Amino acid sequence: MPAVHTCFKLLCILLFSLLPLNTYALQDGIKTEIKCVVIDAGHGGHDPGTISPDGRIREKNIALAVALKFGRALKKRYPSIKVIYTRSNDHFVKLYERSDIANRNKADLFISLHVNSSRSASARGTETWVMGPNKNERNFELCKTENSVITMENDYKAKYEGFDPDSPESYIIFSLLQNTHLKNSLDFAERVQRKFSTGPITVNRGVKQGGLIVLWRSTMPAVLVELGFLSNYRDRKILTSTKGQNEIAAKLLAAFSEYKGSYEKEYDDSTGGMQKVRPAKNTSEKKQYYSIQVFAASKKVKPSNYGLNENDTEIFMSGPYYKYVTGKYDTPQEANRALKKIRIKFKDAFIVKIYGNPLTLHPYKKQ
Ligand SMILES: [Zn+2]
Image (cartoon, rainbow, N blue to C red; front, side):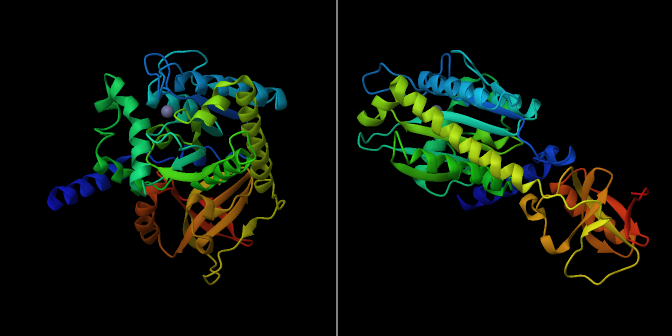
């Protein structure tokens, strides 16, 4: 019914405004180096995931085997990176605990590993998912399947704010979320798919977006990888062989190495000790004004990657930090009105006063 639909949308918007958005990484200063990776083997324990047509092979076992092989290879190549598994043996881990583990450890990347299945035995190939709205029925089906795990948790209604994996309306909330880390998640996902397409499973089904609970709560770039189809004979042969699993793990590592290189290069663009690094483009120069500090980072980042308008954002160097401020206001009252809007997305944003020659950023107390 349309009326119910509208009410639901309003409820979602309300919920959305109350939800803590993924800004902790920003408040801590954006990290410029990859130091910790969480590898999440899907399912486990009494949740087998998808099962092969003959009933003998379970998704949970393949996910775990590849997770451990990938983790070991990662550790060997990058001994200083902390590798954390959400499970390293066959036990059940709730979906929210998986992302909690990553959040608690302030991980820089979350990789969830799964195996696909289809009613059609000919469906095969790999796909990598990032958080986003379900664009079509097929996307909805996969998200429903992967999310349905929560119904195995006794407390899921309270833990997931009434989320019902079977109800398309429940997914509206995801389309409203602007994931701070979407760009990096997409970048890593693209690299995974490109590496995968060189084998052992060469069919590349692409990067997809959907409302996946396990990614929803992660406060870092996060992907869910479907390593192949258990329902397909050729994929299954590769997925269950030690050689196939090693090759898949090696491709994940290759994608990670590329991503790490590009991520750390982007953030290694230091401009030295300038007081004011980059002026806003579209405003006239003022001698004194109020602005809103949105976050600070230890190296220079692209404001648009974090949902800020490039034209309205200025960056000030202060001690070891680049401070990102947005807007120019003549009075604290004007700044305060803008602050209220900005705090919907960046809850720790605050007003600063900018003056001096050269223009310097100062704290502003009354707020
Ligand atoms: Zn799964």
